[in-house]
Image (cartoon, rainbow, N blue to C red; front, top):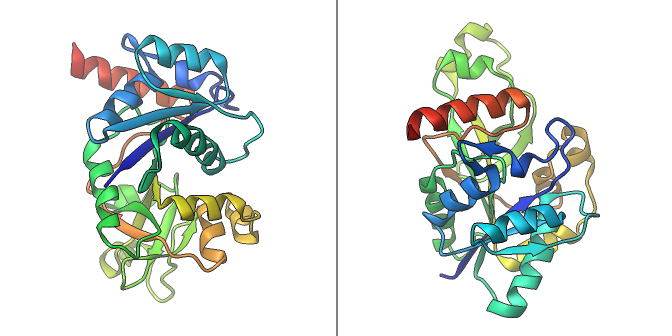
Length: 251
């Protein structure tokens, strides 16, 4: 199966401008994500809107595609990057959208994700992690998801879902398995093209979660289960935490 991993990397970030080029123990964030992705994928390309990121990726020997600054989502940036990459390398069977702000990404997550496509009916896949502790349940950052018995996503929300009506909150964890979404996606090329062409939906706008666009239009998202959760870098505080973790690991 020919798989292409695309790492969207915008220079602008409201909370951390220039995030892909942030230095983490001697390497840029984008280099660390690229190298982690290469541990699981043979074909990796960065999709960026900024020449500074292009030059940084080329400097460490990575493959990079310059894309439009007008894309509002990583999905649309992935599609343009794939179309440009395909003109030189030929079509891929599966395209993986790797978050460019997770320098601690576990390669095993990518392997679990691409493994979903052994099912020929899988058009779009993502990962979830079961919430196991009360501390995880109390942490309302990120995104939560409910699942069907067929291991497909039903709905994504910024709120903890589902709400358990007749139990005190302190009893929820023992009564139901809650899942946190891990923001990795993989697509068949046809699904990526269709997704990018769909207009933003009402549920997508309400939650600010573009995966709800696919569900609201009748699409299916197959789910794989991970036991790890990478730390994404969204703020200067996140960056400082990751810098310390990696320095401790490598020193």
